[in-house]
Image (tube, rainbow, N blue to C red; front, side, top):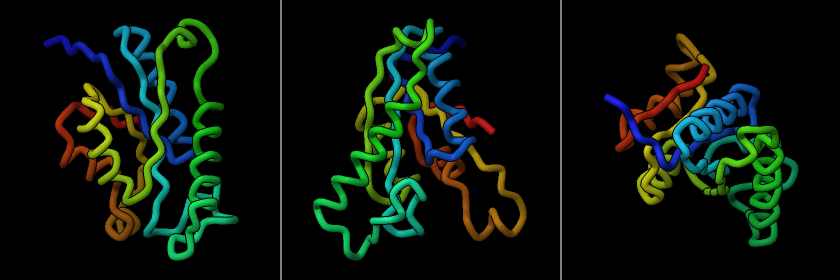
Length: 151
């Protein structure tokens, strides 16, 4: 069976492993003539991402702070778009969401009619995985399309 990917959703939390998924997504997009949607979810329940931790508080997030967090995340995603050939010609867009990462990734994939999701896993095992859970695992359980999990 040959998949025909036209829209690839790739997520990152700006960690090294999260960023590694972006390269995979652009390689697959170049091979399939697909567009890439780069996605970052600003968590509003758990400890915030270090990228915007200095001014982010879920309880006190003003419109200005929310806009700044989104702007910083958007800029960080733009910096991660590959600039070299053949990836420079891959059509791409950016989506920033707020909420629980797994829920938002599934929602964005369904609304955007993604044909594939590329997501990284941090490889937590044992008790750490039991308590933290796995965003990738929750996405796989609830999404409508194939998921490529990058370690």
